[in-house]
Length: 185
Ligand SMILES: Nc1ncnc2c1ncn2[C@@H]1O[C@H](COP(=O)(O)OP(=O)(O)O)[C@@H](O)[C@H]1O
Ligand SMILES: [Mg+2]
Image (tube, rainbow, N blue to C red; front, top):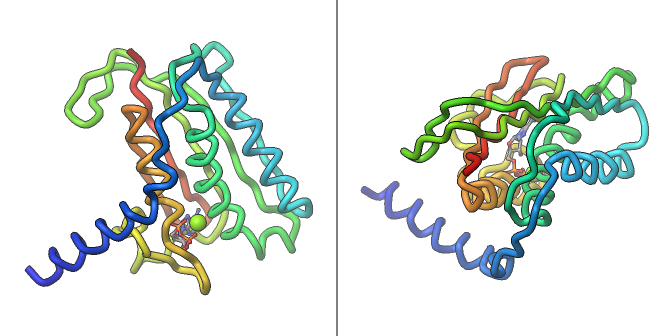
């Protein structure tokens, strides 16, 4: 009971913190590879040494209606965490991120069935998500880093949910895979 109240309170706090970002969506035709490419150049600018970002795109993916800036922010938050987790591999020079895009078929997201969905992956070869955080990383204010806000993944999830999507995560040492599924109409 106590815990539920606490987390309600946190959610309210976060809703308030994020309110400025919840501007009305600016919806247009989005090419998801332009989103990936923008995030790639932002990450490469911040982490110029020892990091390879590999693209594995299905270029036949259709454009879809969405808010490009929100999608960039969501993918950037995920990729930025991955790059931070790769710090020691960057020193060794073998840090790797993979941006992958695919089509998924017959997917159920939030109880709605989609014939087609975008199936996106952001994969890193870092140490993996600490076991004690694994079940909570999408919760507000959960951070494994000194000075971390713990809001990056919360915000990413909010933005993806606004696009009839979900984020899933599968992580073990050497391979952390964040998957974004977005239902297509
Ligand atoms: N790719 C990743 N590899 C390892 N840990 C990760 C990864 N992505 C997220 N995490 C963990 O999840 C935590 C929460 O991330 P986030 O919500 O962005 O908050 P913040 O980055 O401010 O800590 C991070 O602090 C980190 O401990
Ligand atoms: Mg973060």
